[in-house]
Structure formats: structure tokens, C-alpha cells
Image (cartoon, rainbow, N blue to C red):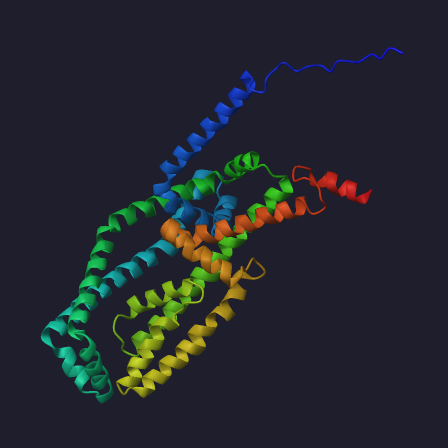
Length: 371
């Protein structure tokens, strides 16, 4: 019997074709251009991040103007101007007051150390006098206080020299915010067309980012600002020095999970108690522990509602890591990166939940599951 063998067709065409080469070149050029765009945008990342946050939380305000004004540019301009008056103007006033109090406080400490008045005031209290005497045996307290005052003055001068860039960044934030308001629909449409996700998955990711920004701004920054304000008011009422400065410090510390306003008011209460002002110390302790400490549990549900509330541990690393990587914009970008990562991982989990490859559409998976 004659056996006939069929020869398999031989593919003489190599993998490295002209089309494949063009794809590789296109991918490399895209990656290079995206990297260059990142370098161009990086100096202005803070302004873009804060503009995005303001665009999300102030969207109802812009919608109110847009429903009453037919011209999109005019509606966006009025919304930006309203935000400037409501948010930026008080921030400028507080920032100016904080810098002024910091400068005056540093000068007062340095003058008190040089004149020796701090020794006379401390010597009037036996407890503080004994404590300072013990510290002086271990080191020169006067020189240390003078060094701290000089360092504070140096830092304040650095803040003042950087105020010009802060003004430029503020103007850039308002500039970008205007176009976020006016061209919101076009920008979201372009972004949706570039994201390799289904419409439902894109909506989920966008909603997760929006909820995270709301939770960060309202549930973190606003609550921290209220805590700092209440603490600063108590400092002012008790006659403690630099109430605006210490109120701002308490607000900044309240932003970071685990830390809080107690880092400031607890040492102040201890100082008041050690100096014999037990009534003021008890009042500050009660105010800080009950009013300032419990404001988070009261305000957060009212401001955030059923929106996303992330766990303390990942939020801590997101905020601290964001501040380290992105600077002040990390307050927004850190939680947003965390929320995006969580959303993408959740999409991967759902796509591969039934043992199907990730590229299989969800409708196909559900049809297979039903059969």
C-alpha cells in the first residue's frame, strides 16, 4: 500500500515584517512622547491636581451657572471667580497671618533668649525651674532655643521667597479650572475613548475617583480645617501666643491619619498645668479631647455620607507617600492613585472570576456562565 504524505505549508515569512517593525517604532515613539509630556507637565502637577479637585467638588456650583447662562465661557468664568472669593481669599488671609505670627514668634523667642528674660519667667515656677535646671545639666537650653528660633526664621524666609511661585501656581490652578469647567464633556469623552475599558467599567472608575476626591476634600481637609479653627479659637480665648499659627499647625496635623490636633494642644495643656494655670489646662484638655477630638465622627458622615471611606492604613500611606512624591498635591493625588489602583484590581478580579481570560467581555462571560 502506498502511503501518501501531505507536506505542511511552510511559512517562509519571518515574524519581523515591515508592519511589525512599524508597530514597534510606533510604540517606542508613543512611550517617548508620553515621557516627554510627563516632564513638561510635572512642574505644574500641583496646579492641575488642585484644579481637578476643585472641578469635582464645585461641579454643582458650575452647573448652577451653566443652567442660567447660555455662554459656556461666561458660566465657567463666573464659577471660577466665585471659588476664588469663597476659598482662595480666606486661604490667602490665613496664610499671611500664619507667616506674620511665625516671624513675630521667632523674633520674640530669640529676643527673650538673648535678654535672659525666659530664665526669670521660668524661675517663678518651681516645677518648670527644676525641669529646666535638669535640662541645662544635659545641654545648653538657651543656645538650643536660640538655634530653634533661628531655624524657624530661616524656614519662614524660605516660605516668603517661595510666595511668588505660590501666586503663579494659584493663577495656573484657576486657569486650568476654567477649562475643566468649560470643556468638561469634551475632556471626559476624549478620556473615555482612550481608556481600554467598557462603558460600565469606565463609569465605575470615574465614580471611584470622584468619590475619593469628595472624601479627601470634604472628609479630610474640611474636617481638619474645622478642627484647626476650633483649636486656634481656644488658644486665642486662653491667651496663648500665635493662635492662628497653632490652629494652622493643628489643621495640617489633622490631615494625616494617626496624627491629629492633640499633638499641639496636649503639650500646651501640660505647659499650662505646669505653670500653675490648672483651670485653663483643664478647659483646654476638655475642649481638645471632646469638641476637637469628636468633630471627625460628627462631621464626616454629614459631609461624605455614603461616599467612599477608605481604610486608615492605606490612606495613611497614600497621603504621606503622596506628600513625599508630589508635594502638597499629594493630598489629592495620593488617595486618587490608591482609588484608581483599587478600582483596576477590582475590574481584573471580576473579569477573571470565572476562570476566563481578562480580555473576554463581561457579556460573553455571563452568557457562558448561564449555559
